[in-house]
Length: 246
Image 1 (cartoon, rainbow, N blue to C red):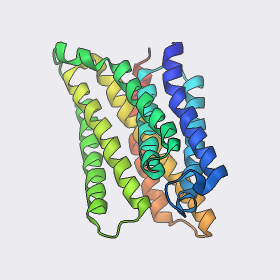
Image 2: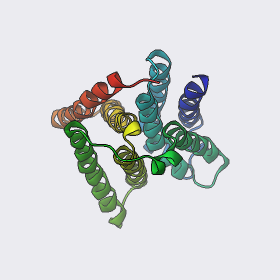
Image 3: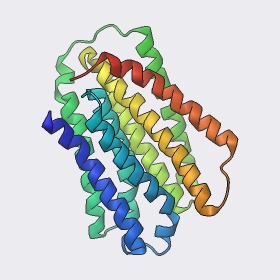
Image 4: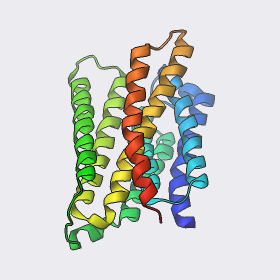
């Protein structure tokens, strides 16, 4: 149990450390001038997310799907920070968070066992969750490709594209495991849905904070759409997590 907590909380602590240093040292952490101002809202949201993830992991009943979801969300947050820092010693902080989060998913699901387990029947509900994963994953990939193909993509857009691709890669692994191993199905699908709900909620917080920083009101339609997406992920997340615990 202590190992499960440690693996989950360590990336949160590292992301929180990186975010705090970004806010305190500003351009002293990033690889280019002006990036601290560009990522100001992101750093605040990342710090809030890290604290929330750690608190939830400590307060909630232990469930593999919850831990995997937090690991996946930390991968999404840490991956762009590694790029934004460039080849600087500071990049070791998010890189360590990224490595521990990846290790957490591998360790929790015992991926090496997947190939030796027989496939089991997939319930209609689980098929729906897999379809959701494919649909949203395709959206993230298409958005990332569109950004990367732009000749004038901004740094913030570029790192967002990388984060999207990293998240989809994690989702693809989890979806594959859910199909290949019925014993890991609830945990892996729970991880996908939990990370999707958490990151959409983070996006809402980002829109609000960024709006305050720029003295602009976020569009009500955008908030409504992202809020609906949060619910789309949150409802199956709660359903799956209720069925599974360590």
